[in-house]
Amino acid sequence: MAPHPYKTENAREREFDFEAFADCRLIYRNAHAIREEFLKEKKTIRKPLGSLRIIQSFITLHEDKNKTKIKSASDVTVDFCVEFIVYCMARFASSAAQEIRFCWRLLKTVGVPTDVIPPNPVSDPDRKSREELDERSARYFLNSAKKEARVIIDRYHQVEEMASRGKDPRRKAGGRNGDWDQLENRLWVCREVLGLQTRTESDLIALGHRGVIRSMAKRPGAIEIDPKLGPIQENGLFAHLQFYHPSLADLAPFVGLLMIRSNVNLQCVADCQAAWSKWSEPYARAFSHGEEPDRWVSIILPKLRGAQSQKRKRSDGMKNGKVAKAPARIVVPSLKRPWSHPFQVLSFVQKLTHPLRTEVKRRIKEISSKTDISQEECRELDRLQSIKNDMFLYRNRSLITSLKLTTRESQLTPTALVEVFERYGLTAGVRQLRDAGLQFGFRTSGHSLLILHLLARHSSRGTAAAYARRQDFFRRSQELFVAIFDKSVALVRSSNYTIANLRQELRASGLEDWQITNVLDPNTRSRYGNRCGGPTSPPAPFDNGTPPGQLCRGQDCIDGCPLARFLPDALPFLVKQWNSIKQQIASVGIAAAFENSLQHRLSKLERILEKYPPPAVLAEKRKLEEEGE
Image (cartoon, rainbow, N blue to C red):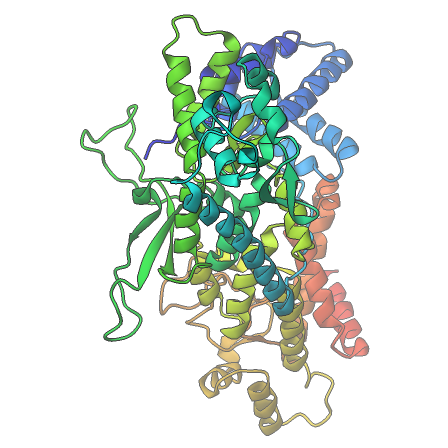
């Protein structure tokens, strides 16, 4: 599948005018390389444009301050990079890391050697946890979406029923009094006289349809979904055309049903193509012996974020000099018969938007047949070509567009979707819909990252772990960590310290008998002084670099390894590590002000040391000072 580019070369040239950077030679002279690196397949140019302006402003200040000129990659020095870091930290507190990352990428693009570019010392701010959609709210959302979806489905069936009925109600065609009052006659006019074309009222008047507009002005049209009010019925010609041309609000309940039933994000839904072969396949498995083979179907949705699928060769083996890649996709099993499940939802939307798809193709043919095409028509043709096969087409007054194009150009959830979903009870954005199914599976599986990985179709459990850090997940895992940690040091202050008591505490903390045996073995002590419950089987992600069956090489137990247990004899090792990190931080100068792993480990060490008797900790620190003198 070769999708139409969202930004053609002409569109990128028009929209991104490098003449604005004529006074910044580093950017202007490398315009082609920058365009290829930052604008290829870009959804919008606003972000790179803003970042380029920041770099342009900095270069101007740098040149004025240092009485120099930055014309090419050879003029960029380490001092230039350091000053840019300070510049960003002083002006862009929350986005400094992002702007520095963009600049480093640009410098590499224009040919600056990597040994000149220092590491990015600034970390991205922690993302805010999203509010979870609880089970009751999710059920309310689902029922609300189903209720309004039924309105649109009934409207569609009403039109289908009247398709073979109706006649011309106009006087010149022999119409009688009362003919305009019959809905089937008004729909006949929409089909046979207006041709279901998307024209403005002024265009229709120019074509001689003023009488049609006047006759429909006070007569009720289709029941439609108002984003804020829900189902309403309005009068007029465009209300009648909405029988055939759904709005985005009309599609909203189906988008919501598809997202909450399939656990995918909005862009996956928006990118869905209308052809059957693009979004459905026979389901190759059965869930129980003897089950009907045609009861299930596989829904295929495009995946344009995250990990890409493995490379495959075309018949010629190459594409533009490179091995072609198979398009990434998400496969979702769906029941065939229930009307609110993905298969029936997509089947209906495909039929609902068919008149719009027909009109798009008619308009493409009309423009293409002209010998002299204006610039405006050229832009319209480019837009129509890009949406002609999209599933979620809708009409916005005189304009046909698609959810795919809208979300990709704006990088925002369309207002109509936001308002409809807010009425359904969504409080924190459309991502809550995908999270709802993932959270349910995550909780009912005992907070298994493997289950989350399978449900979300993530490329790795590491990605699943990152997605699991929602408000509810984070709170639960944090409580679990604190409970395990507190149990692991519970005997540090105890006066009744026996092997039997220790075994009991370790078992209560979640360790199995073989892991307890390892903890009681002094030979399993790590560099932080703690004992390890599985020295030859470290859990992910603490197993990085450790071959199966060998001793853990990282020994980064302090970062939260669930098999680490701190006993009283760990105190000297903890104090030595604490002192070592303090010295490292003191020796890095300005870098100590940046968020880094040393600061995180120091805070964790101090948290652990707080559990030990203060006099014992102070004695170890003094002992370490005396050894150093």
